[in-house]
Length: 289
Image 1 (cartoon, one colour):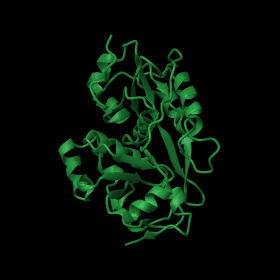
Image 2 (cartoon, one colour):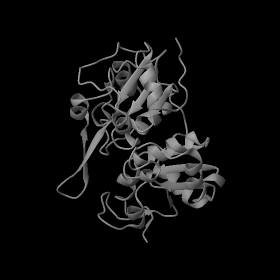
Image 3 (cartoon, rainbow, N blue to C red):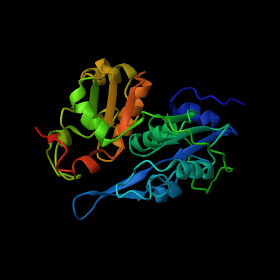
C-alpha cells in the first residue's frame, strides 16, 4: 500500500484507478452560496447535492457546519485545533491516510479545506483537478449510496505563517516586501457592483488575480502551470518575499494560495477574515477604481 499522493493536484484518471485504496479518503467539500435579501451571500451546506450523487465511496466535509469556528461572528474562520482534529477524525482522516478533496465550484472549497489541513500539519492531501464537473463530464462512475470511512486519528500540529490577521495585512501595506493579492473578481476589485462585504473596493495597495481566472470555465480544471505562473508574475508576486491572499471570507483566496503553492511559492498566507472583517472597519484603508 502506498501512502504517497502523486502531487498536490491529482487528475480524475488517477482517482478513478485508486478509489478502492484502503488508505484513501475522498471528501466532497461543496458549500452553496446564495444571495440573501440584503444582497449579501449566505452559505448553505452542500450536503443535499452530495447526497443526490457523488464520487463513489466519498464522504462529505461540511465547511460551514463542522469546520468553521463556532464562536466567531465571521463565517468560515479557522476553527480551534481541537474542533478541527475531532471533525477530521470523524471523517476518517488521520495518521496513515491520504485525502483527495473535490467540489462543484472550480476548486475553491476543496482548496480551502486543503489549506486548512496544511495549516494543521497534514500534508497527504490533494485537490481533484476539475472536481465534480470534470468527473461527470468524463462519464466517470457516480453514486448516491450513503458512505462513511472508519474513524481516523487526526493529530493537529498547527503551523505558523499560513494564516494572516489584519495587523499583519496593515503592516504589509507599508513594508514593500509583501504582495497582497485579491482573489475576487476584477469588478469587485475595482469596487463596482454590489458591495457584499460592507464597503466596496479592495485593500489599499493590493493587486488582483481572480480565483475564477485560474480555472477553465468549462472543465473547471486549473490552467497549465506556466500560464498560472505568468498570471501571478504579472502582478509582482514573483519578486515578493511573502504573498498574502484575501477575498470576501478566505475561500476564493484559498484557490490563489493553493496555486501559488503548486508553483513553488513557500511564503504564502491567507487573510482568514478577509473583507468580511476589513470592509466593515472604517479605520482600515480601502481604495476603488
